[in-house]
Image (tube, rainbow, N blue to C red; front, side, top):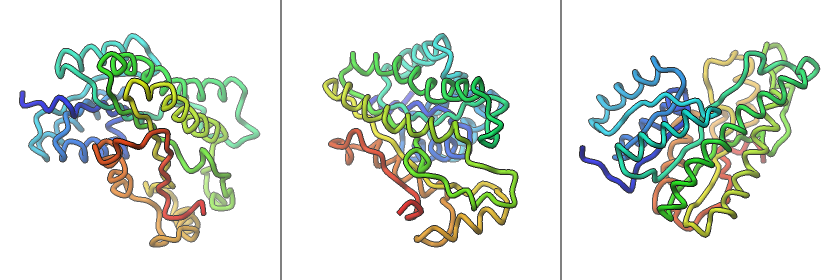
Length: 259
């Protein structure tokens, strides 16, 4: 294998809408990419398609539930055996239970706790194990996916007339992830590990036209929802040496929606 050992990145949720865009962008820049996901069919298909599109042979899929420590350790062992190092982790997975996304009044205590534990707890879990390896090698780069709803209140009127809402669990999760990012940056900095977050605005993905129109009316840049390629450039910047002196930051990519 022709491996660039300094550029080995794990992308969790790597076969989803944003994860696939991240994986493709990294592969196109020559990174060795490990797509970690729980959808084996989509994960394998995504890895094969990206390898064919980019000509980068160092693209692989590995099954990994980030809430399962055994699977996380197996993922890390694979990376160490195959590539010798883990230079970066992109926490992009979106674990949730079947009841996620209900309106506030219908969310049970049990569902709230389970979803917070799965999503934010999953980020903690995989980060803990990957960070242990990075602490040994005294280098690393961790990027967490936050959200504008991790620091800004929802505008519930944009959901009127749709079956959509902004889940209360999501606000708690993403707010927690943004602060977890700062905690980790402070704790891991002495090991030359930097930790940052990206907080996108809404990404267009076949939502109802009324929602897209209402959301877009609040965006200063272009009057539109975000596209995946609006986010990938920020990821590549944070992965690159150009951001080597940046840690503990939450980079907002929302076209001005939260101003």
